[in-house]
View: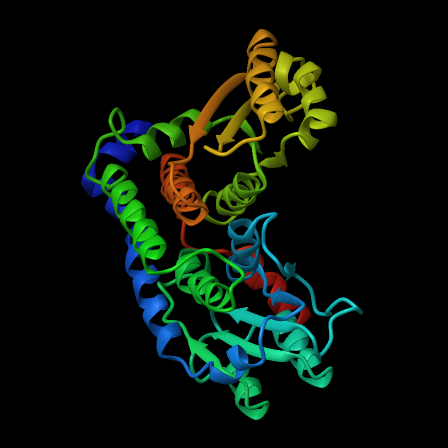
Length: 370
């Protein structure tokens, strides 16, 4: 007897058995991560960092589920941030980074080779440095040797499930430096929003009332093209694709309006939209699905582009899913989308009969280049 996708998601015993690494529990810990990270950062000795004043730029180096913390900080800071926030996903820092800048190295394990290399380079250049990640790690040792602050983070289980534990130290630091209009009320509002979404998306909530399970079933068997309608929801779109990759082992295309209207929109006239033969090995096409991540703060012309893009897609047979961020500040808005995304990608893996925990290809690649 075969088990269909919805039955996998709505049968408690099947759902639990399909998630042996307990990724759903890890996602549910998000609000607790926010509160714990805020406390840890407030208790850390950052006096010298704050005494030195506002940096020219905050450069955040990190990879994968850890590195997205830099993108989160950049999204929350937005265009109004008085200092540049520059995420680096690489071994090397840009040539312009120097003593006037603050480098924050983020690694959940504390041993990510690219992050270690960039952190060591920051020390050599005389940059202010802060380490965020696993206690007793190589990154913690680099910070100790450089007499730099280090904020320990307790992993939720996987780096990709520890987004808020890794991101909130950066948000608190930027707030203390006067780069963000964020404080205790904003942090608690984000934690409360994460709890609200977690309640809606909990495993024992059936798919017809569970927005994350419904989203997973909509995405199954399609090629998601995910568009953000602001820089903030553009980061949420990137997070969505990464979580689809790691949790569901599933591909996705991402973009942000208005740029996506100048290139990706043309795929509405292609074979993934029209169902022409010749895409899959069996001669069938994978249907495109447009997923719009709508911000509550949008440029008026981008709002028009979003509306017309959805109509254009529907007229060509491309199905459209629209997800709206909550109101409130940027941290709360981002939290509302990311938590739904994180649940949905785990549910998609389970619906497809895939264990969401392992990332075997990443581990194999690391072994090959070690």
